[in-house]
Image (tube, rainbow, N blue to C red; front, top):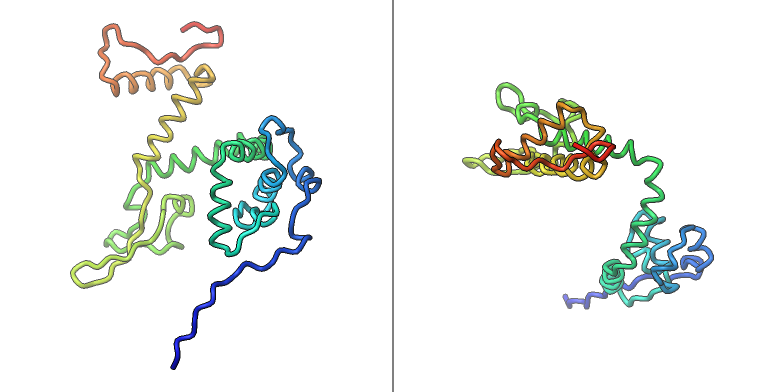
Length: 224
């Protein structure tokens, strides 16, 4: 039997109705981003990307760009996405969208990182060492599971949960406390918590009790 040549799939020709017009794009992105100096296709790319579920390839075609194959389109879309002005435009759009929900998102993210930082491995296994099924695990701890791994131990296939790296979540929480709260003056932290955090920070940096340099948390009046 003859080996038939493999045909490369070409992207379907885009109909005009699939391509965003500039007026349509401006309705989708009602922001003044003229200072970024995006050209017409770049603006349409940003509008498409931010409103189509963040699909780079689809945004590429919606902007009116062409590619002989989807692989070429993906490569060119990635290059467009890497441009600083494109990243800044997307960032500004997302800030407007997220703003009404920022406080709630912040609480949810902190809660997620807290769970990933302080979980117990035993929460995912029975007392006899057998792995709990997903529906047996506390639903609040599902965010700790990054995936499921299959391993061979002594000729037997064992399925294990890949759990989040606690140190990474701890580091994220740490950075949140010292970056966000410090910028806000630390005034929203209870006095006892603030002192405890400062002590931890100073010990971490090997500073002595005598003449130690404290973290610059400030009160509203600007004084310690």
